[in-house]
Structure formats: C-alpha cells, structure tokens
Length: 218
Image 1 (cartoon, helix red, strand yellow):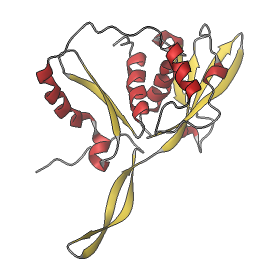
Image 2 (tube, rainbow, N blue to C red):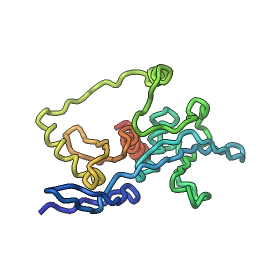
Image 3 (cartoon, helix red, strand yellow):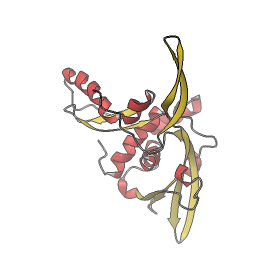
C-alpha cells in the first residue's frame, strides 16, 4: 500500500472542493492545490546609528523556506556573496496581518548596496525570472566568467538520481503541480531539495540554504 504523502511546509497547500466525472456520475471531494502568494523582500542597513529599510522585490512564491528564498534572491542578484555579510533574516513582526509575507534581511554595515539597481517597481512573476533585452544584457554583464567543470558523474547514476527526486518533493506528491531544485553530491547522492511554484524560486531557496550554512561554493 502506498504511503500517504508528506504535508510539506505549512501554508504551501490548500484544500479546495472539486467535482470529477467518472463512469457516468459526478463526485465531489477535496483536493490539495499549491498556494501562490506574494513575498516582499526588504534589505535593512544600519550605519552610524541610522537604520534604513529598502523594499527591493515582490516575488510570487509558494510559502515555505521564505528566509532561504530571500537570501538566495540577494545572492542571485549579486548583492551578497558570503554568510558573514548577513546579520539576520526574519519575517516582519511589526505587521501582524501581512508580516508572514514580508522578509527583512539585515546586512553587515560594510556591505555596499546598490538599491536602485536591484529595486523592482513591479512584482516578479513566478512564471519567469527575467525578460526583455535590457534585463538579458544586465545578466550577461553580471555573471562574469564561466564556471569550469572539474568533475564528472557516471552516466549510470542519472536514473538513480531521477528516482530519488520523489523523496524531497512532498508538495508535488500532494498536488502534482510544483517545481523543485535538488542538490546532489559528485557521487550522485541526494543532499536536499526545495520546492516552489516558480522554478527560479526553488533554486533560490536551495542557494539561500547553502549560503546560510556556509556551504558555498558548492
């Protein structure tokens, strides 16, 4: 008998009433669907006794691992590169109603922030990470040199790795509709993974966890 699916992070799914048609009859039942909600990412800087808070992005995401997502987003945008540059990550406690959808990242005083370059005047969709010629050109400039592959993975490990994905896709197991980013070591052993309705968010959650743990470069 198949084991029941794991629940996944709190707030990542919601039960909705659906109707299905089978063998000439309609049946009503509860179904689990993925939740998509906005997350506002703020950067907090403190210099010479002055505190500055800047809202730099609002991204549509699946709730869960929000701290990792915020840190991974800042890493992907080139704002932070080392764990010591981040002093604290927390949901906004001053806003009881909406605070669970706001994450503030407090940076070390020596971290220089180009807020205007990073500020998003519109929300970031979960469907794509970048679009438009200007955005593509900016990414090309920011990425720097290409990574060099120093190790190889045996081809016969690939089917085993694909089979292992199910072990970290709890929300997908419940809903059948979600992206995942998964980290394996060079032997093909699964380390951990993250899920999100946006594939770039799933990767940012994974990168954020690595940065917070001091495990970059991976």
